Length: 265
Image (cartoon, rainbow, N blue to C red; front, side, top):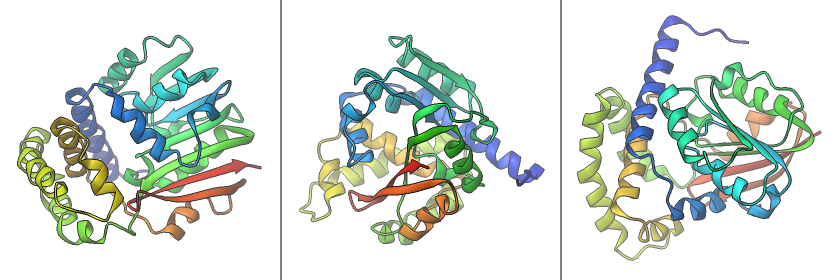
């Protein structure tokens, strides 16, 4: 097990603070988030969660916990690593007394054979030690339980990685979040105009139905992190290689990301 150096821990704390700022600004759950979640869990359906317990590792504002709970999940445990973010999630999930929400690091997760389903959406690719995090998630699953990871794909994002990702890496991940948010507004306008053009790529067509604020939140989310990995298919499979799981599905979601679904042995 790797131990964090002071520099690495400062970087992780900075990342926690940056995302916490984002979640307190864009703190509402809106109907289109449900459709977004359905895309991320493909080929599963919401009915899959009925009667099951689940863990939402890196829950953000709680939007990815809401839909399984509405679908009849028996219980849920959602956590994130910043108190301000957790408070937003508690408010958004307050209608579900069968959902516990707390503050912890994914590296400190010590549950063993506890949950029917473990989901982690949009989290693992921002971590310094993603393999260690995935080991903890697998350990938390009951035998026969289902692991669901959603991460950024390198395949399908080549243009973004060539022209936009350097802006994140060298500029926007190093400036105050409020300034990155200010930059997100004109970039969102450009993206809104761009998606109005004819496109063959499914994801760009999907963006047309999203509001300016929703796209702004997405753009801001891309500008913030100091760690942001875009993985090839085999690199995603390597995250679970050697662990007691059997991969059931690998979906190139909207041609821009990877959804991995595995069953614990």
